Image (cartoon, rainbow, N blue to C red; front, side):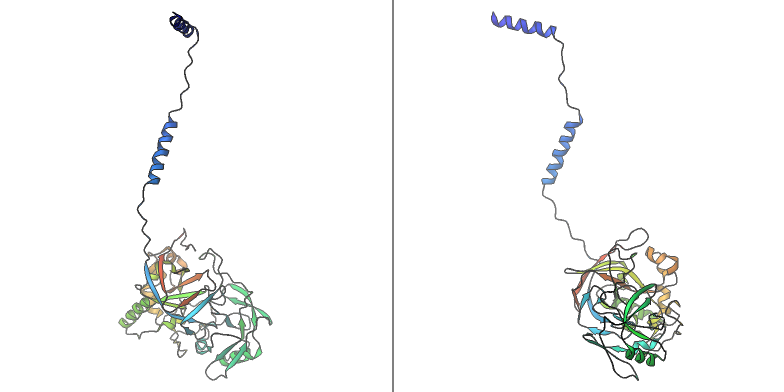
Length: 368
């Protein structure tokens, strides 16, 4: 009886009290939970190992050349350290300038290629040239300074004294020339359009290291032979590093080169002036000397005449936005400019580098 009474009371209460529906969760909540469970399960599943990106080429360094004095003879090495200012240690550390502080090069004075410096420099730079006495110039980073101009850049360099000035003025038969040293405390940044990270150079034209490919020279010489022109040696292009193991002109596509922990960034193709037309063993050239180091273009003498048929900006415009710029239409290209961020590292003949493709931003600038 008591049980029946309790049931009757409960039923009566249910009929009197309003029915309140239990709140229900929105439909998307269980959906989100389900997605999370699925994603978590997938994350725990064993994954297939990711294949490493294969390099475009693996190359070996065959030659290393340092040019202690801009536009003068190079010194071949088996190994060389990198420094923050010069690329290869003390490369283009020195330069000759005119009375106005403008740098000299073989464009104006082809006979500079016969000036032979010593390396390593140590405590003094020694210079010799045909018909001139041996000159020894003690390293001087604290002497009188002079504002020097390298293309559009101005730098404060240290004058290396009257004896060196007379020596080079007599050799080139031009009064008022001076020998200048780029001091460690000076700073000259490379073009920010091509090297986003801060990188330095000394008296080079624009970048601290120049790379060339043996196969590209072989292809050029084969084309010269078809024109009944003699082959030319690599020293016409004055590279710092020469590599073998890649196809001709493959370097156009490289963005970086790595060997163990050392990375060299490939930032800009090298446009050539008239210097490749100058025989580096004699100073003779088929192209006329200019009145200044600026302008004049590549000239019409070999090998530039042949290069213009297949390595000009106009010909290469469809290959890369860089070459398509109207200002590069008549330029000719051989070699690649490099930068590095590893002062103290070493490069050696025989080192093998893996070459990776370049990453190009809008506007044709290489990211580095």
